[in-house]
Amino acid sequence: AKEDAMRRDFTINGLFLDPLDGFIYDYVGGKEDIKNKMIRTIGSPFERFSEDRLRMIRAVRFASRFGFLIDQDTEEGILENKETLFPAVAMERIWQELNKMSQSDTFAHALIDLHRLGLLQVIFPDLQHMHLNDIKHIVSCFKFFPKNTPTIIYLMELFPNFSLEQLNNLCAYLKISKAE
Figure (cartoon, rainbow, N blue to C red):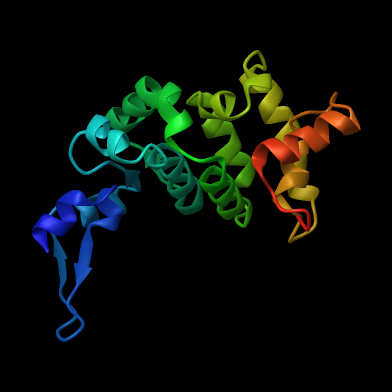
């Protein structure tokens, strides 16, 4: 279990429950990080992110979903590795993470954090010159969207000046299904 825990991504995912006695085994400080509302990589963020670059986006998803902060070393790891996201991670995997994020009431916050950490601009190069305050303004309307709004509708809001053709190209770029 200890070796398995050391291979996991974040301390909050490195806990093991013994189903017979209910004891939680914590080899990586996950209980303390949950108590302190912190997302932290297990070991070096650089190692964890080089093993799977999608973990950078997952850190933001977990932080947003649970209302946690991202540990400073983990944030620095994201900032220094963000440009390595592509081609290491397939767009389909990123789309899956965005879909998971959008299922939470904190999707707007997740997009703000993705932008603050430079990941949103890596995923969507057209947003490279958009200021963080502009992102905050755009996503502020998300609270008025109906429940079960498709993820792509939220994302299209980030591109208010796109033509219909550009929006169709965005959907193709994200490799979303025709139904979506």
